[in-house]
Structure formats: structure tokens, C-alpha cells
Image 1 (cartoon, helix red, strand yellow):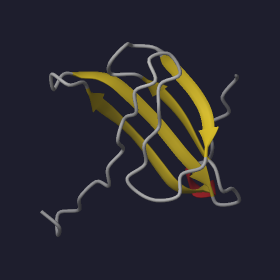
Image 2 (cartoon, rainbow, N blue to C red; image 1 turned 90 degrees about the horizontal axis):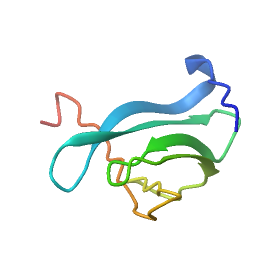
Image 3 (tube, rainbow, N blue to C red; image 1 turned 120 degrees about the vertical axis):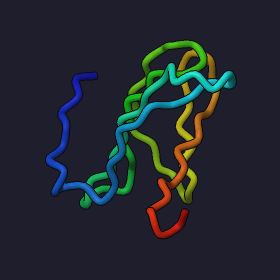
Amino acid sequence: MVTQYPNISETNYFTNRALQNDSGEKTGKILMWRLKTGEKFHYILKCPYCGETTERDEQFEKRPYRPWCGKCGKKVMVEKIKSKKEK
């Protein structure tokens, strides 16, 4: 799949963050977005458990979003980032 990255103004959700494995090491990464005109999210996941890269479109009903690895099948949780007010 050849990824065409969106213009940020065309999205209503966008995140690019590191992901931790069970040992707390940041060995994974996710780039995830949803276009304003779409219902599905697009994500590119480097699994923090097995290192495999998975790219797909998926619809999530509610937060926290849980994309999964196409190789090992583990789900990763993409939690809402807390604002300074929420801390």
C-alpha cells in the first residue's frame, strides 16, 4: 500500500506517537488519522511487541482506539492525550 499523507487541515483526528511494549520500552510507533470526509481511520503501526509494520483502514466505534498488529495479532491502545488542565 502506498501511503498518501493527508493535509492536516483535512483531518478531524491525527496522532503520531511512540508506543511502549510490556517492558515500558518505546519500541513501536503509530501514525493514525481520520479525514473529515471519512468514517474510517487510516493507521501505520510499527508493533511495539514484534516490530512488524501494519498499514490498514479500520473503523473504531469509541475511544480508546485499539489498532492491532497484522503479524502477532496484539492490540495496542491509543489513549487520549491529557491536556495540561486534566493533569
